[in-house]
Image (cartoon, rainbow, N blue to C red; front, side):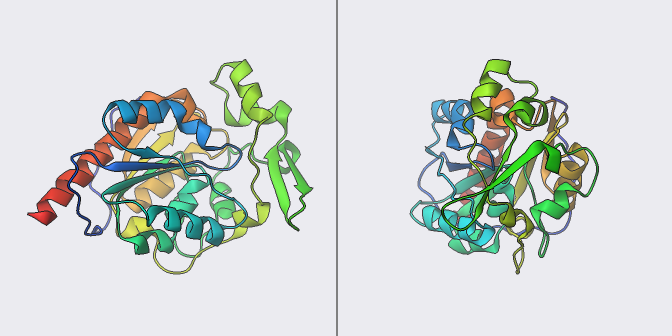
Length: 265
């Protein structure tokens, strides 16, 4: 892992005014496409050992608005401050304006994740620079019983594109237990301002990523003014480098609690 990027944040950032009587922020870990909440297990263990309440909800992944509404409803039952971390597709979801409306999210952590702006889709961002292996010849799209479609990576391509630095046996298990996304979601956008324009953000850039190109990750994180940490990892960074991911989430949590205490005093 390289030295954390200490560059000044881009643009003025304000944060939601949330209060808490706890010294440890609640952490919500949101999985991306092709995996489920189990991708966070090693990260969650570290955060729980550090005293953080941890939640890892499962997204429907049928549409961007539906995922955002589902996550906002989940967050509405939690007390702040909340540190909200999203991997991959979940970056689009935690960027949705509906999330800021809940009012208890104090920090965002993008883990090899999309950081779209208004009217930007995940699909167009992924193609902003070359290097993604999420290409038609590596993907399968099949209709489902809900009148939609399911997109997955071909199992024989999963390790190379998504999890090249995992044990091959572990990558194979992931390949055959993928949680599909409706490909239509990847072309969907939101109106209104993204959450990262009003909530402090942190970003893990996976420098060996063959799903979401590192150049795209860096472009989005720099544009958002995120605190950036680069990690030598595949796209499966929560599994490949759980310590680095947990460390950044804890850094975000400390900043959120410190800021919350200052606002409450």
